[in-house]
Each structure stands twice: as C-alpha cells, then as structure tokens.
Length: 295
Picture 1 (cartoon, rainbow, N blue to C red):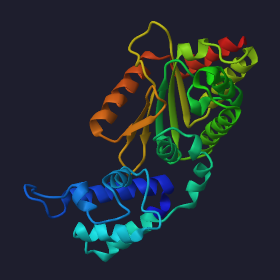
Picture 2 (cartoon, helix red, strand yellow; picture 1 turned 90 degrees about the horizontal axis):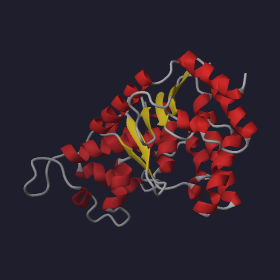
Picture 3 (cartoon, helix red, strand yellow; picture 1 turned 90 degrees about the vertical axis):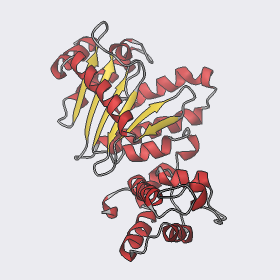
C-alpha cells in the first residue's frame, strides 16, 4: 500500500495513522478516558517537540532519519504489532518522487510544499478562481506576465519569478500527464476579461484552455457575470483516494492553508457544485473562449 503513494501521500498516511494511534491509546494522564496529548507523547524526546509532532501528524514532514523517535512513540501508544510497526517505518522512508520539490522549497510560502506534493498525487482536483486563470491551466507566458505585474508591489526578484514560473509549469505537467487524474476547473469571467500581459499572451491563454477543455480528463467551465451563486475566494479540493480529501485556500499573506475536516471539505464541495450549475456548460465554455480569440 505504501509503495503506491508518492512522498507526500506517504507522509500524510503516516501522520493520519500516528494521530489516530495517539488519540486512541490507553490514557496516561489524569482525567483522560483515552489517548494522550502531544505534550505527553513527546516528553523526554530531545529532537521532538509538540510543534514538530503536529507537523508530522498533518503530513508536512516525517521523522527523516530519526526512526528511533518513531519507535519510541509507537511504544508509548502501546503498539506491539510488529507488522504495523514495520509498515509505519516503511511509510517513513523518503520516496524519490519528493526530489523535484526540493529545488523549489526555498521560494515557496508556508504550507505550499505540502499542498503541491499532494496535488501531484490527487485522483481528482476541483478548482475555482474568480479573477485569475487557475495555475494548472496557465501558459508559461501568462504565468510570467502575472508575476511581473505583481513584482513592484510584492518586491520580488527576477530569480523569484523564474523559479515560480518553473514550479507552476512543473505542477501543471505532473498533474496533466497522468491518466488517472480528473481535473475540473471553474473560472470566473473576470479571469478571462482582465488583461494579463499583451494581446498575444491572452490569446495564447484562451487557446490553451480550449485545448485542455477538449481532453477527456479535463473539464473547464466559465462562470459568467450576473449569473447565480459565486464564491468570492479561490479554492481547490483534492480527492486523495484512500486518504481524506483536503480543501486548500490562500490567505492575504500568500500562505497556503489546507484542511481535511469533513465539515470544511463538504462546505467547499457545496460551493463548487453550486457554481457548476450556474456556470456555462462545457461546450458553451469552449464557444465562449473561441469568441474571445476572435475566431
């Protein structure tokens, strides 16, 4: 089971299992019917803090080479099934598929490496953006122009822009080259009306969306002005197969926030489905985009 997942999926699966074991183990603290706090779990572990255990349980990091702490925690959680211990240790091993992210980590905001890693493993992605073409649909020219127009305000460098454009194109490639993924995107009409770059940049972007929208595994819908419900913020929902689905949002500081809480995932799924009904149909969307190209 572990070998079928990439690095991010393995970390997430490990974290979920460890959290469940901690929350359901025999109690060691007064007043608790079961389980233990993270503070109690890491007590006496020099290289492990509550914060680091929290990041492990959410799948952001693993124990790296410090397998001893993993074994200690499993003992504290009363895990004596050697097969389960071996399985969790195997999940902790680094996977080669994580290498591609390493070169971009220094340029990525908080939470983004974790999300991007999971994005590349998702079985289905539901994504919405009200005023910018979603990153998985962007051309290199559009992405570069978008970062360039933000540059004076965000005080970024040419290297920053280059690396982020490379990352965006690599994310797009890794998702769209897979035959087992389904991508469904809703784009607000404003995203297609607001000019980014010159006319050629926008025309190329329209044509790219048309090309992708005609692929069997990709569905794109335009949500026009003055029509039905629309969410005010962008978001994405990842279906991770056997792991809990996650919803992703960005905040004003550029950090990426994700949640696997069923209530949050359900809330954003309802938002997406409401916009599906209000948006143009698949063929209408292609016709709308072709009209923008001047064809």
